[in-house]
Image (cartoon, rainbow, N blue to C red; front, side):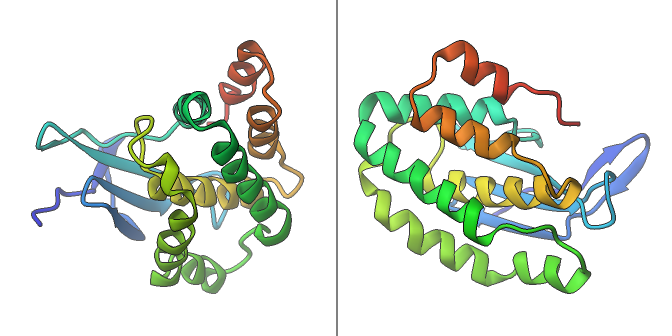
Length: 182
């Protein structure tokens, strides 16, 4: 597979990924050193659309939330199970990254292996919404670690997961998802 370059420029400086992940041949997700803390993760991706790779994008909570809302409208119970899984992951597996070793461990092949196995529990959601379940799980996990690494008491992503699961009104979900993070 011919994969595009994931080097991006900002303020005239090139940024090279710490790690890239390919998901379903349709997404390339890259993780970079962020600027908010020593072990901050900056996440960017490309998506294959009509046979061509998109420009490099930064995932936003609102994109993630809209996709989950679409899935919820089509497969309510399975989407709630999916959100329960992510809330449980947040509660039991996410803590701030405090060393290069912890960050490298997170960004290992094992992460993608876990995501691939976990996605098999949500096959009813395949083909529903914009993003694949594998991509959503991978992005969610990385966003969780990013948020916790930059502020140990952070809770925004978990609040978004709970608002989606609880069926909060669209205004509440959009308000949570569009909170200025960077």
